[in-house]
Length: 361
Length: 69
Image (cartoon, rainbow over all chains, first blue to last red; front, side, top):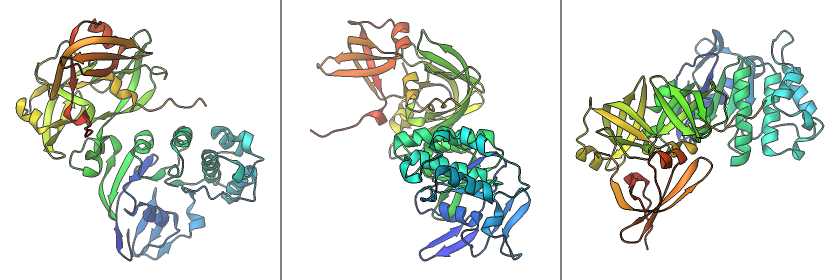
């Protein structure tokens, strides 16, 4: 896709797996919303091609440009864009009216139930909280039985408690429906929670694209690695709770983590961000430390990070972790690639980064 | 012990307060300053930490915030 505005050029290409959630992540003004608008058919790019599971929606070279209303994209914007003079019920049924007659998809009751809006049906949008409005907007999009859901920073206008309220509903939509989701955001916690695939954008270009977990351990992507919350995303399963110890055991391929006690049932899959700044290194097996997670690791590589800091890539079982340490520590411990080490992560550090408990259905 | 953490502050445990899962451990350094650590209750138990013990607060350099007096 190529498009120019005065002072800005979009030149981006990527492919996403379907079904699945692809997050398009980048700072404000990087072109991610322009890209989404072009996929939706709300903006015609100078040059571009958009295909969904083999159906070409746009191909400027071949003269294909399916009108927005026939692309069957359900769009959710930052501001819910509900009809202010209509009730929640009528707003939702508007989505249903837009669905093609032969389209399969969620029914009215199912969507109302999934999004927890049954008690709001008679209200007007003005009488809803910001989070409720976004849930209704999501419902309206779902009821149009889209082949693709497009979300343009759907949580960006909400305060932190409202964001936390709506996020589990987005996760439920992802889990319940097969429609692929293109999700534009500049919030990393939304990526952690929702995204399978990640497209990193900066200044109109795609810096990198791939599975979210793989990109999280790339030390060469400052957009991620230079952040204070930079770190590896680990796909974990709840193994066992130890209520008396106040701890939960999580398993990841080739290793285990102890985190503060959680309420998820054993077997539930969680994605955990192990922040690079929370990882320390020992060159001999440590004793007498309060740190609960002492993981045998192999140092894969070192790269310069912030001034006087280094980012270490560590192999732990089949997983990769990042650790941010001072250059002084690298010199004192004579760290070098190939070295056997111990990666130390205190359990209490996970209190801030493990995902919130899913809302009960 | 060979650790990457740059700051190892030796002192004496002056308080151990357990919470639901996390405990706060206060360590008084020789100069009289007190450092508080937030660690799991289990870590308190496995180290058998109690008031009066000699212990060190270990802090990654990147976790230290500086405020100018």
